[in-house]
Amino acid sequence: MAATPKPMNQIKQILRLHIQGVPIKRIARDLGISRNTVRRYLALQQSSGEDLLELSDLEFHQRLHPAATQTQQEARYEYVKDRYEYYAKELLRTGVTRLDLWITYRNDQPHGYSYSQFCYILQRLDMSTKVTMAHLPHDPGDQAYIDYAGKSLHYTDLATGEIVPAAVLVVTLGHSQFTFVRASQDQTTESFIHGLTLALEYYDGVPRTLVPDNLKAAVVRSDRYEPTLNQVFSDFAEHYGTTVLPARRRKPKDKALVENAVQQVYRNIYAPLRDHRFFSLDQLNAAITVQLGRWMDRVMNQRGVSRAELFHTIERASLQPLVATRFQIRKYRDLKVANNAHIELREDRHYYSVPYTWIGRVVQVRYTHDHVHIFGNHQLLAVHARDRRANRYTTIAEHLPSNHQHWLKRSPHFYVQWGLRLGSDVAMFVEKVFENVRHPEHAYRRCDGLIALQRKSDPDTSVSAIQLALRLHTYSLGFVRNAITSGMARGVATVNPPSQELPAHTNVRGNSYYR
Image (cartoon, rainbow, N blue to C red):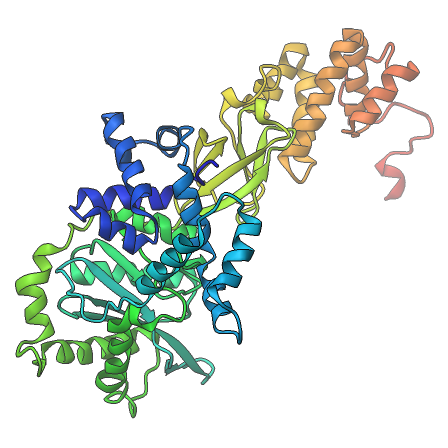
């Protein structure tokens, strides 16, 4: 039975932790996977002879997903391990024994473990679930624990008088318990990532592992062994060169430090500010910063030193360096390429070109504040500077078929120059077309139709039809076409402006008559 490939972000965590000197046993324990799986990916890294973390996602995927197989022994163990929670719950039911479970197991797996082996595996799994991490030491710079306080702070909106609640993000380091606190408008992904960015800048460094609670902004799908991270949060960790190890659901011991930090926040920040009124989020955060500094400088009774001193003397030097550029949130969309070889980014109502060979197919779009990246089958197809002007096109000429590339050269000057090659009347007609439409695109289409009509018709007849339209102040493509097909355009003289002088006639009485 083939081994199920691990997610790419988890494989990268394995490699990073190994580079940082973390033992295989601890990597397997922290990531909830077997040691053999860790060894397999490390062996692939070693056999490749290159730094896989420097490769693109496509190359990384090709290197680390050869057709590897899992031994029968591993497959049997994983089968029992995946169903351990079910077995544990069944054993709590009245009258259910391990023999009953083994009989059910052998019905599903005829070549599975014997009864004695089955009981031994259950015993080992039971022991592993009871191991407590409460007394494990926290290495300097190793982990940062992240959570939101259950209770919110508030400020008053001066414009409306409304009391606005503010979510409070709490981040604490494992070794020194040096804590960061920040109020934000909400708990959305954007606010969460912005708060974490400020936390890393507050620490002036990056811990090796981030341990968030199962927040929606951090974890999309909670799982005991392989939780699915929010893609934006995963990109954030990738940008700062750290790993993410979400706390397990309903396992407060996994994040005991931040749970305790939240209680300390209530005592050392909420309580001193309880009678204060704030009229903006900035005012609230300024007050939080003052109280946070006092709390961090206070000496801890059990350790005889303050959190700030412990951080600056020991843990600060153990953090990874902070990258120079701030993380920009990436957004993702799956979009279909239209017949004009463009995709529409509906957030901006702007259109970006894609190679015409992808017309009718779905591409993956990743965009930030500044750029739009378009991928197809994990291959980069195009990069555009992001443009937020609605109903506009950003086009690379090479993306269009050769017979469409001339569209990029379109402009009023282009069409007027075409008209001059046929005569001044045609150029004047083109100018009138642009003067009498609301949007240039309508004029472009009308002039394209005029060019096509001129190619299909007799040149003199088409020019005569345009002269007739100009004389009648009608700048419609339909009128020119009808003038050609009906024969009205034959023999039309060049347009001459009518004379302003009245003809001589006996009935013209002159101005002397009216005196």
